[in-house]
Length: 125
Image (cartoon, rainbow, N blue to C red; front, side):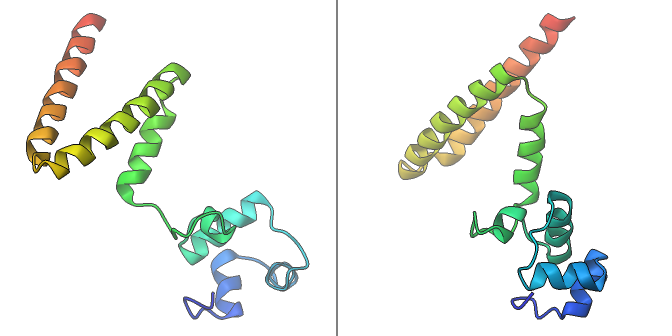
């Protein structure tokens, strides 16, 4: 609230908290429920991890949100594969940038992805 110069009244208005609840949270007399923590994070436009001091990042980007949503739609085996592949891709990407071949690397990865996607799609038919 201090970072954004938001008054207690504005905080209460954004969260919908009545005075007693707002005061209990702001003065440390009560821990917010998960639902209220989410309301607070939305009201302040920051992540819940930022509020809990788990992360220094205030929010995630739209790309990160899309990636997380896609990841959450996968089954457990797919998630394990994606985590392993992400580590490899990060390392390969760093090496490609260092070698000045990042553009070529991105195109190769995109083409490889499209080939695999098309192959899986044709197998489903």
